[in-house]
Length: 332
Ligand code: NAI
Ligand code: MG
Image (cartoon, rainbow, N blue to C red; front, side, top):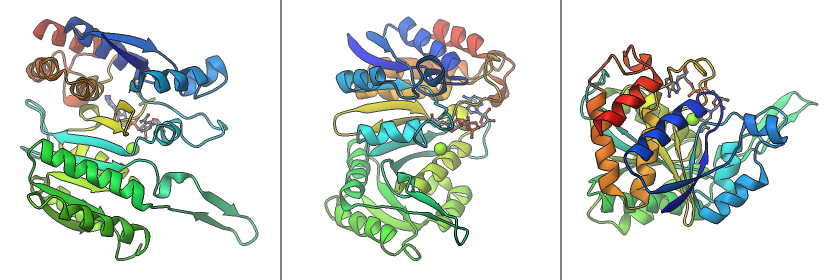
């Protein structure tokens, strides 16, 4: 029995959580869910968007499945998500984007995995507004240590999964120190993996290349801000935000979540696509070495995607979150 912390989250979070736990339970996953709260709902119920009980539970069990969180204004920090990643040193944010069967998208056979540095860069929250001369500042910090952790994770992943190439994305031509350091570490780490092809690309060119020909990419590694943007772009290549899962991995803790946010525009309508969150849960199962179970659920999802009458509207379906969930359960 695996003890896993479960944070349903805000907006569509409870709906997709209900879907995913129903499917995992039906598939026979041996999981004891430890339910916790965070985000706007935790602020409203407990007066704290990141309650101590939630932190303590993650400290104790080290693995969580987390729905999207809205950070309330005036919470004392900018983002509950960023705070959790920092707190548990979840240095690598892994976001696969793979073409799914029966999904209409502009490309075929996309299969890339983005590794985004998850703890620093421009997201450390050191911003200030200087009233006197009306300007604003933002500080980016890049360390050798965090860069090496995420770049090495990307190469190790490539090695383990028999992938051929790692592309490092940067803007070292302008950001000579921060991105310069990231690139320097990339070149060093690449030396340890002579069998894996290594290249670096400047982020603006990368954005164009990904749209022109995404099939040329395999494993991608980049800094926090670029990874945030390019991973949403990757989701777009395979059909949208409702279809891509993500894992935040550290040396001794991991939090799995969808790439998308709380989608307030569709919350409570039973039309949120649970596939992204389900794929995150399958990454969690693989993390637990439950590979056969993950494969079986994945096959049931692929099969269900063909039946548009149960799929959600974002993927051209006429069904709902609950209809899709029931269909996956019966296709298991
Ligand atoms: P969003 O990802 O919530 O929504 C963007 C668009 O995609 C919306 O039109 C939404 O309806 C659609 N969408 C997203 N997920 C979907 C799904 N599963 N099925 C169908 N359609 C889906 O991004 P937005 O609107 O920028 O952010 C909303 C809130 O979420 C903000 O408070 C933001 O801070 C938070 N957020 C939280 C994240 C997390 O917890 N990791 C990540 C990104 C945003
Ligand atoms: Mg994002």
